[in-house]
Length: 224
Image 1 (cartoon, rainbow, N blue to C red):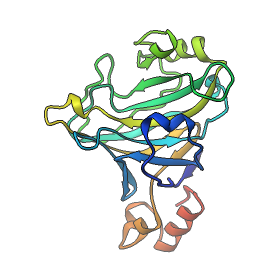
Image 2: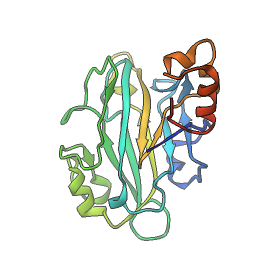
Image 3: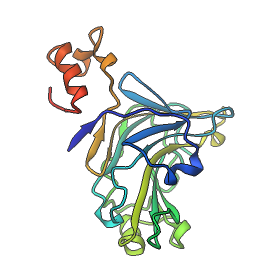
């Protein structure tokens, strides 16, 4: 499993995610990266935030191997269908997404956990619980991974995103989710930068010294 440094390029509109060619991955909406994590916020002024990944672009839905993340709700809680992974799928072979599979994070069927401490989704690929929303393709709202494979297994992925847009569901109008160690198709994003190695940061990340920390991040290496 490779660990990858996120390349930040904010400002991509939500509706255009599937059509944008990305170098590796990018932030959009109100997403910010700092201290080895990404903060995704949905509020009255910033309605959505997210990270786009192209690791699995062009391959079949049935070939996707991993989909997981660490997450913590630092303002509000889970809810409003957020946070979630979104898998854009081309069903007619024209390389344009014809719909999106929403993969909800949290505990079904309500997905409104407090998540006030860091949680991990586990690998959602192959999961047997009902968190796969297939309604854009005529499938069930509470579908399973196998339901997705039965319906779309031979169709093509055009993009995958991790999205937060549920601020509207929170009493204060704001939902903030911090994510880290996000795995998409076998590639794990740690969201660290060289600056995170400074001022003793290399110690908290488990490296032997600052030089090893910087070298590992530059080479996208998990070695410590």
